[in-house]
Amino acid sequence: MASFIIEGGHLLSGTIIPQGAKNEALQVICASLLTKEEVTIHNIPDIRDVNNLIQLLRDIGVKVQRLSPNDYTFQADDLNLKYLESDEFVNCCAELRGSVLMIGPLLARMGKAVIAQPGGDKIGRRRLDTHFLGFEKLGAKFNRIEGRNVYEIAAKRLKGSYMLLDEASVTGTANIIMAAVFAKGTTTIYNAACEPYVQQLCHLLNQMGAQISGIGSNLLTINGVEIMHGGEHKILPDMIEVGSFIGMAAMCGDGIRIKDVSISNLGIIPDAFRKLGVKIKVDGDDLFIPRQKHYEIQSFIDGTIMTLADAPWPGLTPDLLSVLIVVASQARGSVLFHQKMFESRLFFVDKLIDMGAQIILCDPHRAVVVGHDRKITLRGGRMSSPDIRAGIALLIAAMSAKGTSRIDNIEQIDRGYEHIEERLNALGAKINRA
Image 1: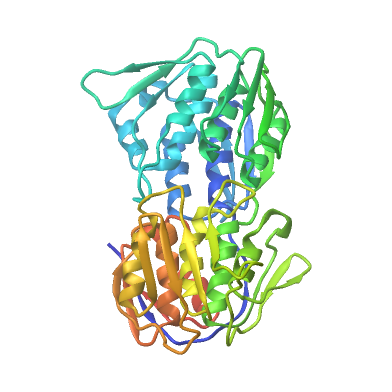
Image 2: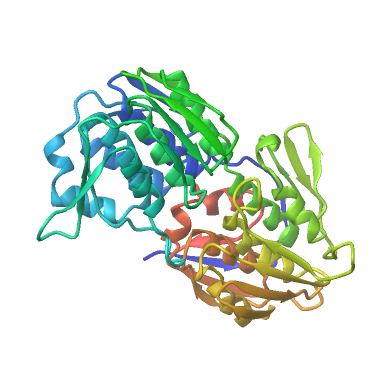
């Protein structure tokens, strides 16, 4: 298990470029399973979760060629169907949550897939019902394989259907879309997730020969096709990393430029930080965050305490609440955070409290942060990263803290952030990997 040793109190300055979007990468890489032809994908982030998925595709017979550090080609023209049914494959899937996105393409093209409960962040229940209910609507059947904690899902030919999703699940929507491109007839998905990464997946699939309309809305229509061909695609900048860098610049920055962020695809992320008083300047497709000697949390128009809550796109992504909580700890004023989607995601705040933050954890879903207005500096400490987003939030807290901190289990951070200590050290941070 690796750790970060962080010497806090150093101001950061300079320019940083966000990596390709992790969640989009997982989706479009799995989309390559839908065709025998070559699919080229640019701007793939060099992170643990994505690299593990790429290795899993190699294991099942996909020809993978790395053109450059972030550009790959994938060709799934000779899949090893026996390996897809092996215990080794199932065990690999169980350790990687992104592997769930292979189910839709494999079901559509091969007529069956084997499913195990996937791994990932320990942030509460992350159910897969939306995926499976969608597959059943398309005509797939589930069978439990005796003696193994896995299920086989199969269908000779999927059939288009109308479905109203029980939740606007991003991975659920992506998985159902990829299954439906080969379904006979028309599939209509209502209450579909409409995040930019789902839109990007749909654009790639249409380029490969799919017929998807309604992209960008929560009502998608998919006319099934007989065959898909190759394509080429560039992944968007990672909006979660952009938000993480905004938080980092607010806490310990001395003027930081975040380049090429695709502002039109950030949604309300910049405004969420502005509600905490953080000053953000837009310069073309860059964001510049000047030094924030003080920043004051806004109130609602009627004077009541500010509340920030997560919601499906175009609402505030839950992946940034951890960073926003850290930023609020040094603001002037108080704010209530309401995490609605995952019942364990706020439990990392006890580590911030140990560092000197004033936070009241009301229940598993709500926390009140009383800002220090920089009058009391957070103090360094030893902590462990419970998930990707809490990990980066703790790293930001440690960089702004007085003294030295140690963060264990940084493999969680590596799952979502590319060479993070090297990139932050280039801005003036003092982070060592142990």
